[in-house]
Length: 610
Image 1: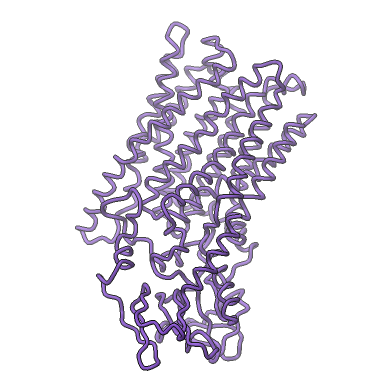
Image 2: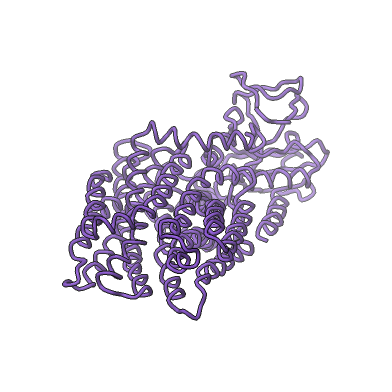
């Protein structure tokens, strides 16, 4: 739905970018300069730094919302946006065609007699390093490299025009949408990740009922959750290249529909094998919304703004798996309702999110938006030489898929920063998912709580997650201080370690909470003690998650998505495996020593944010 409106808005905006001779404008302002007609010709006067409102908006770029003070350098620019990596590899824009956006008139753009100016178009300026192959076999730069996968025919007469954004403040650029619109996009996409991970824990509350129905042991029943998590992690490697080829929305919507359908299959399953297979496929298709939600943040928020927005996304995402067990446990506890309602609730939740996706979420992936703009320009002008950056050196889906599969593994094996943070984040998620069995041992066996009240105990971790929010402005204060210091030293940008402040706040909380919970979870000690420790655990886990992801992304900007895929795959696969092992650990080691082991492992990683 929103894609339809976006096409209409692109058409209207493009019509505003045409200035015909019949209007005879005397003073036309663009982001490059001032244009006017004199003696029947278009005259150009370059823009001065303090010209007018658009120039002022450009200077304030990065301060559009709740952000004030110094920003990270460089700010979001047209060039930076076009040069950004795809989620898999740097292939959307060929460096041989890189120039600064500038406005050009009819002699360069159209073969028609109408005198037209079009803004937001790039051309290879003299000395930019590209030449033309008059034989029509493709473009060759100074390096002699051809543009791969392109059906573009070059000639001296017909030179292509590269469609870009109309300067730094182009409203078509998702980074320049209004704060309310970008916040709405963030909430909707975060909701997709929330419902996926909600499904990973609410399903476990029906284990006792399904074990009795299918007459299997608990290890077999936990396989449904394990396969969901494992397939969710592995599917993330495939979801990213799909979204680069077809766009975010065409990936979100079918994935959510298939996720809901396979959850329905799990709810209707008559055998344990049917349920495990359906849950595995639900996890596979649910991986796309889970991984693309973070990618959408990059699409619409600048780097400095993501310091606020990524914690918001993380809090919403963590709310799913932490709140999910509560309604599921009460549904199972009420004997007059079928345990299959744990799946029906997930489908209902997913349906609400799907409706919001279809009705209100616009396309945010810039290469796709520029492709739409190029096609619309061709239609409006009748000139087929307008091309989006995506048209140059198009990479096949198989090539993207191959890179998406091997590059995360390569980075994990060769980059200690990635491997250490991947293990650290995995430890935190292992702790969370072992509590699926652990809380039954702590609150069910020690404090004799009912299944419903035991699930309510997960809300203690959720409270800690929410209490991490005040740490964000504190981390921002230290981040800005480092920006000022780095500029005083003559650095364009500070080191990526500035993203670790939240991790420094949260790292001590995890081992402390583990030791605290492990050795006070006794019948002679009030249940408020382990509940209080779980609040500290939630605070620590979210701080580590946010800082690790931001630090890895800042350290490996050229391959940020692949680096983050390493973290995502390892943490989900490890969590799935531990969902099986955890019950054995709690049964054989006991609550105290199981949590001591987990606390000791997290203590080993304590120095990582430092």
